[in-house]
Length: 98
Image (cartoon, rainbow, N blue to C red; front, side, top):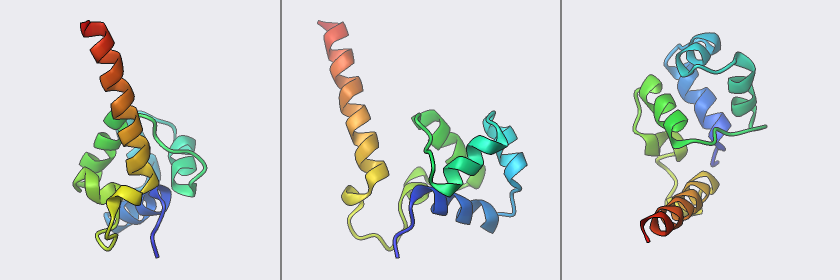
């Protein structure tokens, strides 16, 4: 079964024995925000936060976003959202460079 981002985040955090308050503190967010992410109610909206989570959990960003058993990461909604954001940023930078 494919887990959503929140389930994967909670699973990795617990595997590493990191209390929720400690991880929230390291990320500079509230415990409630992290709880909302783990429940799947919200997701982080910046690559910097995702990179910070991956660093704290000591995992590659890819393994935070997708399970190794997923055969096609292109179908992962988090990956799709990140790809859309990258395209938008590239468009903005292209306009600024014109």
